[in-house]
Length: 321
Ligand SMILES: Cc1ncc(C[n+]2csc(CCOP(=O)(O)OP(=O)(O)O)c2C)c(N)n1
Ligand SMILES: [Mg+2]
Image (cartoon, rainbow, N blue to C red; front, top):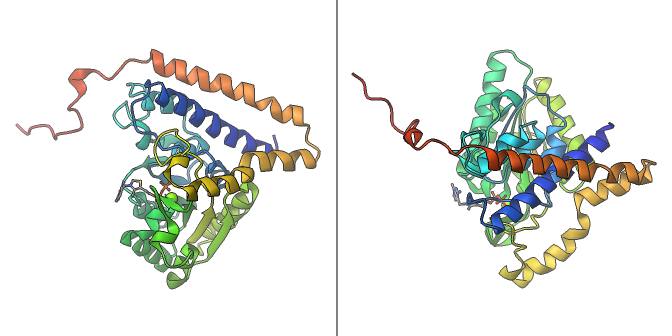
């Protein structure tokens, strides 16, 4: 499979998984709050394709795509979202606490921006151990308003740490538009005070994201320090849950009309076909992926719930005798 085809496959997988999750949330079968990244798949797919297994990835509340693109097991993610004991966090975390350490996905945490400094710590560990691994923090535009985002950039730049700061700028923090929160649309300039490169990328062009990530990873592995990637995109669904979010104001309805034709999946598919790849070959990916997703749903449904007697484990430290 070429890079283009595997990027397409990954985006199709993320979309199919999240569309299915959306259906199961609507049906009431999934109870955990789910933040879907439908429309934004190119960023997870493009960045993670530039990484190796031992590079670390850190995410937030909207991280199904990061988990899958980094190689996290689909069954374990689905089971986690169903709250089952076979889930990647043993059913205790739900959609917003995904983890796959063997694949380098060290954690997704719903406190906005919380994992940005953790990625800096992973970059520092890598440098102190003289290992070639890079650390990637995925976060939204909202996270750039947290003070520790700027502190993290400064420290990573000062110590020339191998870190990629990947901002998925979807122009909203819950229902508040970027223009209501910042005087200027200039997140990429946050790189300047610390002297690191800032790349503004079309976050719906997976090949552009991949190229930008390769550039930043190459720089990081060469000991030249971190980069900030601002990937501009748009979330199609609501902040949380599967609704289309068009009832939250005329603004979003108009914007969605502008962004739907920029669908990262359609764009890549068109490009591959233009380059001579057979459309039938690409269309054949969808049913295989659908079966994979259904198998994961079946696995989650059949998995046991966590045992009640286990409920307080990991909550309190064991009493010292
Ligand atoms: C520290 C903190 N403040 C507020 C919240 C509530 N909250 C959850 S998601 C979110 C919006 C985050 O927006 P952004 O970072 O742009 O990510 P997006 O949801 O757009 O992917 C907010 C404010 C939180 N989880 N953590
Ligand atoms: Mg946002």
